[in-house]
Image (cartoon, rainbow, N blue to C red; front, side, top):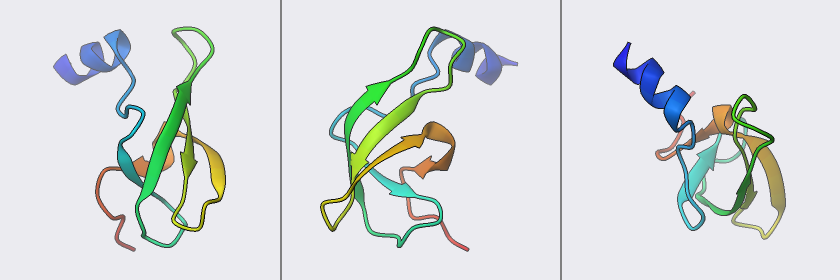
Length: 70
């Protein structure tokens, strides 16, 4: 219950500059360069740049602070 209340109050898990890993992509760290969402009910999305310099706009659900094991 406490986790649900915390997520409703502040659903953002990553900040600009954080290193993250993307599910479904090679497990090299990417860097968060922007965070955005539309209203309190929208799920957070982030713009990240991967190790090859490619920018991705992704939902929070596919990001992790540690490598994602298969």
